[in-house]
Every structure is written in structure tokens, then in C-alpha cells.
Amino acid sequence: MVPLHPELIPKGVTIVRCYYDLDVVGPGTTFGFDVNGSGFDDAFYKIISIDPDALDVSVKNLRLVTANQIHGQIEVGPEATTQYIHPKVIIRSLPVFRAPEPFGVVRPNEVLDIQLTSIDETGQWGRFQVITNLDEKSFAKFRVEPTNQLLEVSNIKPRYPFYVDGVVMIAQGLKHGQYGVVTYMGKREIFRQDPLVDVVKPTVGKTGSIEKVETVEKAHRPGDQLDLIIKGSAFSANAGTFLTGRVDGFDMGPAVFNYVSQGQLNATFHIPPNAPVGVYGVTILSNGKVLQEQPTLFGIVPANWLAAVKLSGSLASGKNGHLQVVGRDITPDFAKTIELTTDTEDLKISNVHWQDATTVAADITASSDLAPGDYIIHVAAAGKPLKLPRGNIIKVTL
View: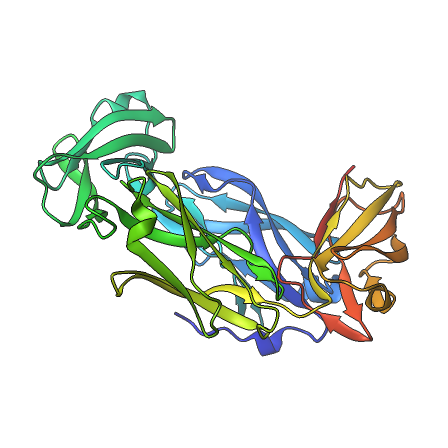
């Protein structure tokens, strides 16, 4: 991969993301996309280009929409190949940014990807999705087959042109291991996803197994209750009696487990009042054996922690609206130090005030001359700029 050169990005400009009007396209398609960031102006807009870095895929009609948004069109030509594409922003012939999220191109009668989309609570069957490009005629020749005869594939249904859905089932007698599926067009193999399914031994009681552990909320304060969701399959009603849990990095006592369904257990910890700020992991064990270990599952944040900026309702050009800065344990005194600014004089923010311990509110006015589009709200407190982990982009509509 060609290294990036972010040092070429002008001072005061940041590039955050790219997003697309369409996630999957075929050759011969033109669609819109946007680059989001901050500090965009004519000088920056004139020195950049966008490189899809793919055969017969080009960018056209770039235009500066707002100080936070550049819009353009991606043209996928007839010779474009099947692949995921991460566009790059180019300055002085060198890449300075690569879009973390791609879009997909898939040629007719080819397959871009096969993904397992869900597993049922028993762990015996799941749904998968083929990303392809078919019509009724080609679908008649299309088939999906498992790599092992004890892995059954059924209910193959198209959603023309780009998706085919199916069900995969584990038949009795399939040994523990990894298994996949193969797609064919007639007798010709066109794509193989192996592995797709991982058949594991039960680790929770006689039937259950854990797939992942999630938090209901990632940001916590000392004294909170930490709620975990343990997802898996074939849990029995007494599955929690086989498990113990611990928070790694600080003793938060034992976990309390509760059965929800065959596919889910819940667990709770009580975070002590003296727990220090930091990032923590959780380990789930059975009879002393580690079943799941996630080193960065949640964080304990300081007081006056700010998470995101969002609109309370919609905001249109020529109208007034309301902003919210949301966080944890925000004090009135801290709220008085918060400054909210934008990259344009046509978007005015006023009356910044403490609402409650989770919200700082403000009024926002969009000039009638303000172009609809994406805008970044810059947040500072006590004179220091803050980077909010859950975003600070708002959308102004017509």
C-alpha cells in the first residue's frame, strides 16, 4: 500500500470521512459521494483531486459545498473490475487520506463478497448474504453449495441486482471446525468463501457457546452499573451458573449473570466509586477457563466528559434550531466555559447554557444564504479545543 502523506494537508484543514449515495454498484453507474472535514475553502479545493485507485473508475464534478463538505460524482466505467474501493484524496500527486469505508463494484455474474449476517439462538443455522450482480436469466444458472455435505444451504432468494440471501444449517454429525460455501455460474466456480461458519464445541454447560461480549454503554462514571450483553447460542436457562466474570485492570467485584434467551445472557458489575479513569477490559470464564477476553470493552470517563454534538430536531436554511452537546456529569460552571463555533459566518450559535448533567444546549441560526449540507461544530472548553468521540457533524437541509 502506498504510504499516506498527511503532512501535505494545509494547516487548519482536516479530512474526516467519505460517504457514498450507493454502497454497491455495477459497471456503467454514476453516483454521488461526499468528503467531510473541516476548514475546506477554495484554496484547498483547488489543490486536491480524488483518486479511486481502480481500473475505469473516475471522479468528476467536484464542488465545494460547505467549509465541511466537498461533493462529487463517481463514474464507474464498463471495464471496472469487481472489488472494494477506498478513494484517496491527492495533493501534489501524493495521497494524503484514504477513505476508511469503501464502496463495492461488482461485474455482472460475479461475486464481490459473502457474509454471514446472523446466527439463530440455537447455533444450528444462520443467514448469509451474497453480494453479486445478477438478473433473472443469470440467477437461473446461479447456485450456492457448501464445502461439506453436512452443512446445508437453503432458501436462496435474490434481491436484484446486488444481493442473494440464503440460510445455512449445521446438520447432525458435522464435526467441530470451519466450513464455507462456494458459488457457481453453471458449472463454473465464481467465488469461494471458506470459512464462513465456525462450528465450535460447547463451552457453557452442555450446549452453549459465547460469540462476543458487548456493553450497553461504553462510557461510564464511577458508581455506575456496568451492563454487558453476552451473545452466543444454545444457552440453557441455568447457563449463568457456569460462568464467572471479572473486569481487568481494577477489582469491580463479581459479575451477576441473568438468562435472557438461548442467544443472550446479561451480566452486570457495579463500578466502585473509587474506580480510576481509564479503559478497561472484561474476561468471562467457566471453571477457571477463559472463554472470552476483550481488553478494551468500556471506559471510565472523567467528570465534564463530552461525547457528541447533535441537533435537537432539524435545521433548514433561513431557520432557527437547537443544538445539544451531550456527555456525562457536566457541571454548570464547566458549561460556562464551552465555546461552539463553525467554519462559516452564515451559521450562528448563541445562548450556550447548561441544561442538565448530560446536556449543554444552545440556539443555532442558519442564514437564508447558507447552502444545505454538512457542517462541523467545533467545541472548546476552558479555551482548549476538544475532539468528541461520537462526532460533531450536523446536516442543514433545504
